[in-house]
Amino acid sequence: MAFAALKDSGEVVTWGDAQDSGDSSAVADRLAAGVTSITGTDSAFAALKDSGEVVSWGAARFGGDSSSLADRLAAGVTSITSNRSACAALKDSGEVVTWGETRHGGDSSAVA
Picture: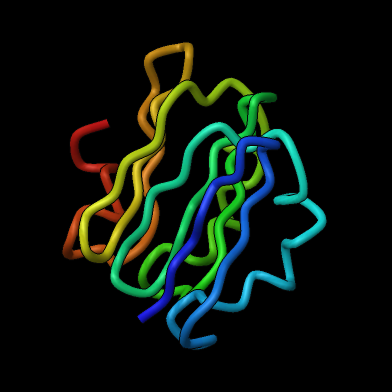
């Protein structure tokens, strides 16, 4: 288990089991300021920044690695949500971008 907390300053702090996203050191520089919201799966987190960028970390299988979608998550995201195994981002264009466990919603290409 791991936790992520959003401070008033827009910084995210994390703690707990490193394998369950408690270690955000790989993206710490991107979580130092400007974060407006956080969502989490069982083993990953995603943070929305005030620039519309999404930053994710934790177990890749559960949404911790959105690097293959980096170009689509770099700007224009207005909200994020998640379930136990996947994340979704709503963009200002109305597009929905999903990642994480395919069978739990991480691949929305069939309905896109």
